[in-house]
Image (cartoon, rainbow, N blue to C red; front, side, top):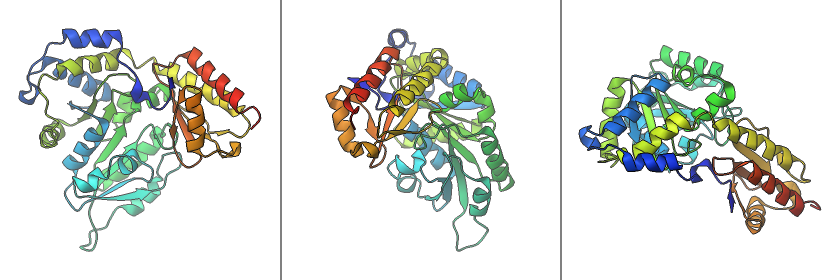
Length: 341
């Protein structure tokens, strides 16, 4: 099978496996794991923040941020198709007791004017706006890179109203590689950031959240409350460190493979392919007479895996385990199957 369902499906490299074998470990709940400390220090440095915290997943990292920033009854502003809103099991409501308020964006970018209007005035009838959440790259928009200028303007508005900003940067490394903008520059437009190490960077487990020293101190307690306080966790922090230090630049290969895939799919009658910015390709398949579910079942016959992204939309995600030859195979098989569509 050629697996293009997500960049989460990658297997750890030999360097990661060796790093896990040789990792120096300690009890991280006691803050005694040297490998975790090294990973957190490196992540904080790269993101331009004072401190960082290793967490089990991107969802856990995002929810720890919400729990740390907000009080029960607060309102969180975020884009209508944000991962935090669509794909995290209503965690912010279930765990933090906060109310999401969505704003429809363009390619994942919210209009700063709408953000400003949505901030609640001081009135006992309204919740308090406790947090603004951004996402970059934006998954549901097709891996689009939210412009730095958009983030800057929103952050300025947030600071005027003393509202913190959290960035779901699960694929922020992809945004940085695609735009040429440094991670620190993105970090400057947020109070806290979550980055995923087990997507395009290929680590088997883990994400990092970064922010001020005081924020991370509070976040550490929330991680413990959520059952995320682990013991000799250097065994998985070591592969994550390899991912962070050795796997970033190669994301450019995934982006090139995605562009080639999109180009090949666009030649298939009945497929409408959205413009590609990073490693996600969205193909609208209704013109072939198939639903997304039907299209995906036919792909399985051809040993290709992808995922539905709407009734007639399919998402392909290029990743470390799918090389250039595999991309050409996918294009050939899909073009052959639908040549008479």
